[in-house]
Length: 280
Ligand code: PMP
Image 1: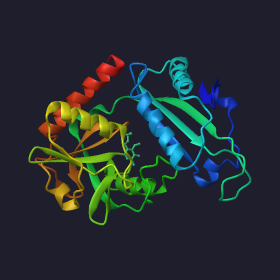
Image 2: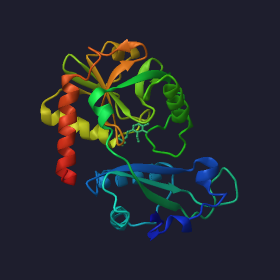
Image 3: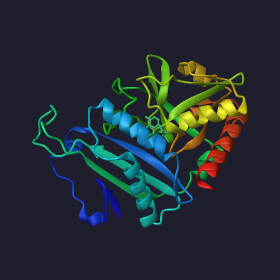
Image 4: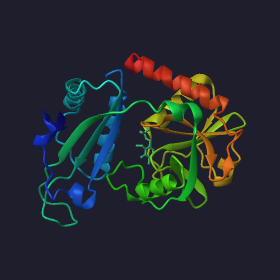
């Protein structure tokens, strides 16, 4: 089953119009939500961010958010999803092709589930990454369907045998192509401030809270590529990658080239959040 606006329907009964503005302009927004043990993780926070993205692109959403959460939980139950993801997107809907907003819009919401295991090997061993120029627009805080900048960066990373592209704007590390980036230097955690140049990751905010609970000092400050190369530890965060150690950036080892102790502590604290929220 899938969620289509506010109804659960079989997947083969849904169809997207060729003049849907999401399809033609990327005029829409989305969320990816993790499911652990059959329960959606931080669902309210994801729906709040969806509401914020919608406001920023001036897309009025007609659905009651309490009801939407209920429908999403029903979708997970209907598909008997235990470990996986919910992909949810809303577009401005169908209209004759014209850049400006149509006079009357009926947004189209689609959500579906996919079984996906936790990325155990990456979490244990860490990943290789490479840097890439951040060629995206200046509203990266909106979770918009326009992902070409991220797609091109990720593809280059994959072609170099890396799992993530770390984006660099004017010498400053902003975030990953689909993750937020943290470094540890002298016991302090650094990550880019939550402004217009990065997505305000839900996992990022969970990790900042965990760091507070663990007594790890945090600075939401920008850092350079050289700071990243010279860091004691580095990791990325995201709904799909959780808290994932970075052991290499370009041709440099980070720290000893293995996941570091602060990263390990935060991974443990993050597991605690999963256990607490989803009873895993
Ligand atoms: N930054 C970007 C560009 C992303 O695409 C993602 C993944 N959606 C993130 C950060 C991580 O956000 P979250 O923790 O909410 O998944």
